Image (cartoon, rainbow, N blue to C red; front, top):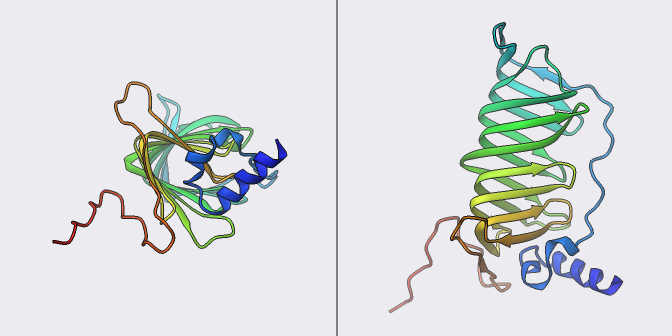
Length: 223
């Protein structure tokens, strides 16, 4: 078993996309979760409006900060009184959230669940929702997008749903459902339930050029 894990780490060091072919993402041993954070959550906004009837409060041009977490959006809607202990917030308009391990998430809207004064779960939607991460020990940057990205903080996974696309600048992966572990930098792609979209993988050999931008068509063959 120790040997198989060592082999997987070598594959990941060469680039996360080939590991889809070599081994499933569950075999990776991801690092532990987020470090403890005892700092208070701060919220800055241009304005806040309280709706007494619905017991909700809406902030505009809002930024939430705690330790390494930065979350900002054009607006945020939550319950009154304001609490991050166990609550759900909806952020809309130019949503940008810093994820762990030098990752970031951008979307049109995000529904964020707070537990024990920490972000536990986020569902980001957009046309498309996007994320990127500077890969550990590499100059490569992982970039992905989908109509919906579900960020589970407890296990450090991003689930890219519907027209999912992922690249490290050299290799490309697309499908109905792509699951990316931002701690282990490992990836899975499967056919999502109820979808006809399969898995499409492009592995570019070293020195053969970078991956095409999302949506780009292959260059025509020379005459």
